[in-house]
Amino acid sequence: QVHLVESGGGSVQAGGSLRLACVASNFTSSSGYVFNGFCMAWFRQAPGGEREFISVIDGSDKTGNADSVKGRFTTSKDDYKNTLYLEMSSLEPEDTALYYCAATPYGGTRCIFRSRPTEFSYWGQGTQVTVSA
Image (cartoon, rainbow, N blue to C red; front, side):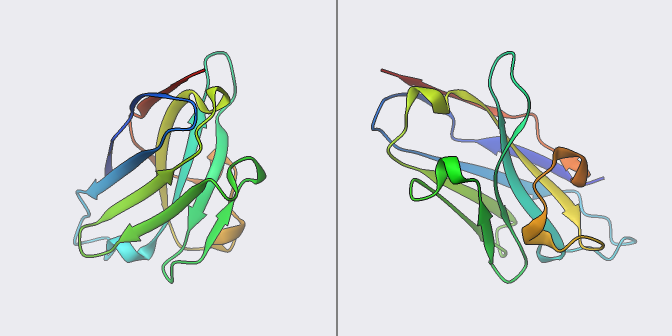
């Protein structure tokens, strides 16, 4: 069971920036998985809303991004630190949400084409981002 822990959320004013991190741990040696063997993604969920795709990144650092965050959010990872990052800039009140990282082993649909919550097996508890006008 992969364990994901997000951090870095907080309250900022519109136009501000935040950097979220997601540390992955508890890989089992029997599974043979390493961090770079997972398709990683960021989602967010606003109160009363559905879980919304933000970005996905594969083992070769190719990314796919939602139109709503293109040019403002950047996804990256550090395979040595087992950590996924989300750099957010030009934040807007509409970005207010609980931000989740997600992971799933490779197989089936190509990683950068994954954008549905059901396509990811492991989830963190989320970190809150609040953007005030």
